[in-house]
Length: 354
Ligand SMILES: *Cc1c(COP(=O)(O)O)cnc(C)c1O
Image (tube, rainbow, N blue to C red; front, side, top):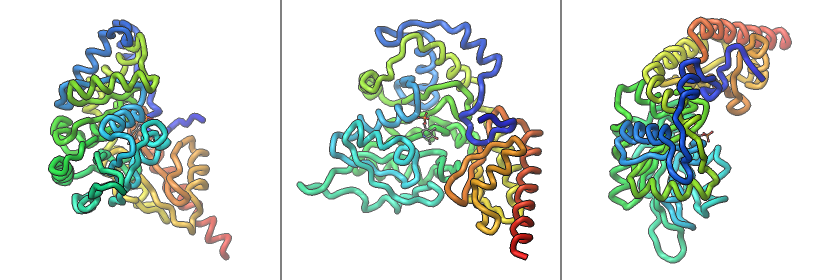
């Protein structure tokens, strides 16, 4: 399905003419038997941006996350993560299917974990229990509504994990949204983590790919695991050029997406029967619909008549995500449509009740 104003996800963006130019003129090599110069350039750029020794380009964020978990935990070991995180909910439990690893989930608040939530969660050892090896955090938190893990919590959780010999992984699919919203550099957000995953195909607007960053030795192991997972790609500089263009040129403009999310939030606040769940901090707006109006599926169907796309997030919740292919005037049209649909559904229901 295509929408004129597609707010389903920030993954729907199409490469701009400038990005296509970078893709068309990319130098390439064989990144499996040797290396590809564009991929090398991307990996060096990302490692430097995240303050890590090395980085590795992969086809998806699921692969970067799952390889990180595999390398940090042995078979039959456990990692701690937030209950609504992507790694646990949206990656088919690949840690279990492919690596024999179990999760222990902890409920945060809109995806945000506080240090005290984790205290006492490390298994004591002995012959009966699995052993705890890793903490995985997500920043910004997708399902939580694009929420930012506050830096002081991240620091405290990472120090606590380090003191207890746990590895630390960051799913930073939208780390640059956190950077844009806080002014805190990506390097600083990454300090306490052994490995960091970022996505090029979310707000940055590249066609495909993610990177995993960490120590040289860790990335060497990750390269081997990437081949095992079927993620070795040959003249992959063709798509890496889009990722490099994205990460070099599209970080600053994420602030516009956050402004647009605030406009959508204002419309939601003005609309009868709609509630923000929670207040948006970055580019994701999660909306709760009063059952008196109907379901999220019904609301989304009504919006589709205005050529606006949104995703259901449960029976009474839906998600809007702002991104570079939706401009401010389109957001203003979406705001008007949201208010109209909510009013229409409200009056429809009260008419039915009379
Ligand atoms: C999109 C996303 C990923 C990676 O998803 P892929 O579709 O596998 O690239 C990982 N974590 C979060 C939080 C995401 O939003």
